[in-house]
Image: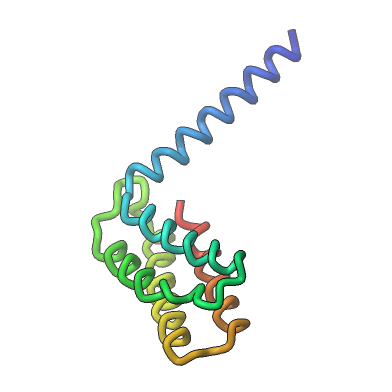
Length: 122
């Protein structure tokens, strides 16, 4: 009986977690757009594409649209607002560095910071 209760609790936890992730994805489509462009850059980095940072301007545009969009109620808090503002600053810096042909290490470090910020926005 104890095992059944434990399994039921785990199933409930996974269901709630999945539903929460789906809600975030569907509630703020602009956030999903930003994450898709970041994923495209990350995929190019993993494949050692020398032009991995050619999407930085697209990422910057998506972040500007995210910043201008109306955040859903579950995202309206100071922490999310600050994270979006920091994200905007870091993406603009990444775009400038990519256009000025900065080193790959420097670009990857800046992009890692962006990924960390994106992960905090939930």
